[in-house]
Amino acid sequence: MSTLFLASVGIEHFLTVGALLFCLGLMIALGKRNAIGVLMGVELMLNAVNLTLLTFSRFSESDRPIAGQTFVAFIITVAAAEAAVALALAMSVYRNRETVDVDQINLLKS
Amino acid sequence: MDGSGPVVAFWLLAAVTLVAAGGVLVSRNLLHAVLFLILAFIGVAGHFVLLSAEFLAMAQVIIYVGAISVLLLFAILLTPRAGRDNGETKAFPVGALLAVALAAVFLFVINDTNWKTVSESPALAPEALGEALLTSWVLPFEIASVLLTAALVGSIMLARTAEEEAEDALA
Image (cartoon, each protein chain N blue to C red):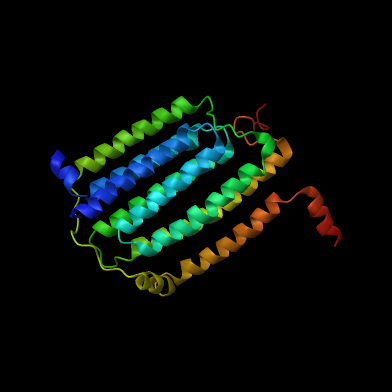
């Protein structure tokens, strides 16, 4: 099992990398204090999802094999839009509060 | 995927990607974290090449490594008094526990499932992606361009100062 696991690369290997990358991104997104750090975690999670989608697109039998790649292209587009809006929000918060730490932005806390 | 070339490439890329993602987690300086993030993006682009998605690998390099990383660096440099500390909140142990539990579930499912896979890669030239985008998925394609325009205008509206808004009102 172990020699075979190392000698040839299959769907499990790519899915494992995707899963570990997603969980690292989740850890960063949930734990970081700086809002820009949180955004980095979100970007890593999006990358992991793209990797997983492409893995299934490559290893699965399908009538339309290009569909998975098209989906990833749209995710990259939406991720770019999300990053631009999120960083503009960070700038706006910084201008008003002089901080981008997510645990300091607590205006709604009574 | 057999043969020593792709296998060695996979393990190298997997190591680079995951170590760089770990670097984003542990580095204390936000600027170092962005540099690690760029390395992780490049590693993911390499995986895309291994999965025979060459066009998306190039798009990944241009959009993530080129544009989003520069955007992140801009945001860090334009918030100078917010500090460059990449520390964790009090909620980090809970989040880490959640992520580790999720990773355990994922790894169990991945290794336990009997995946039905095709051995040979479907032959997909970049032209096929372009043709699909402009025939089957032309409506989502147009919606994506509207979304990008809206995001661009929205970011400019959010990021400009009150003085700039007042100047625009006078003009």
